[in-house]
Image (cartoon, rainbow, N blue to C red; front, side, top):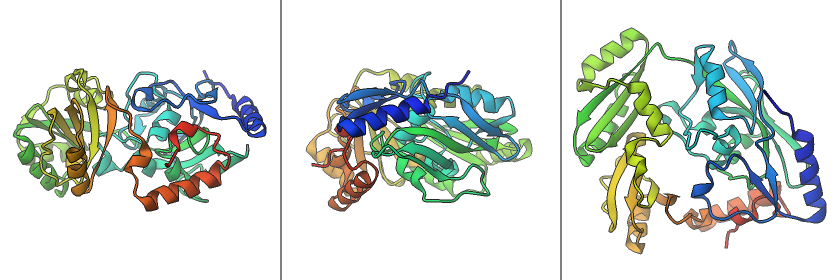
Length: 354
């Protein structure tokens, strides 16, 4: 099933431009829990614009409308023994492709496989003048134009509604295996960074509840050799474990305390925050999921001093993106916003820089 709602979306944007009326771009709502209230203006529902437009297994590309569920894309790829080129977080079963790009989060494979933005070959969107913009290409050998897809990644709908995206895909690995090691947080951080430099088919490392989980994927021979070299204990359900991390159904994510997403240099030692309960380490040390009842000013300063930043995720205070930016970054974002949306029509509640 697919639905092309492009003309209705264009008409609604054109009317908003003419009336100078704000538009609130909405998908499935699977990421709303981490955002400040941005309901200003008329709602633009992107879930009615869905479906796979073009899939070329031999070219390793797939083009889909923004409202297409990630689960549907994954199912289609699996029928051809292919997969998305990196881990896409699925915070809810109804998570859409456009919403995932708009939020800009990447899953556990990011340090090895690249971020989601690295695998977007092309995109179509509508700007704040009601113009349909095409960027990139439809095949890996023909990627041309401005790299707008990188700007769309994490833009949270502030540059305009995304109509469709063309993605790079990859063949499924012959075998996946996960080795488990018992170790404390700082030891795990050191081990992760060492493993990242090994010539082994490692493509994810996570530390949670006193255990380090290391995922290896590739040919059967390469995986068996890597497992022998790494040591540790084998995890019975490797696929299920990593799905629970990407879908945030793992027991770690079920606590009721506020959960914070912290990005730091991968070699940063354990973060000792004032009200910290417990944490998970992902991205070989670069991503820390931390439960803390609140984040104090000294916590913000500490994280900033090590070269990182923190944002509210679940049951936590929603983070104003502008608060994470330097004056130069704010000016750059203002210039980009002005170029794409001069009347500040799209999700204005998420694009204030004061």
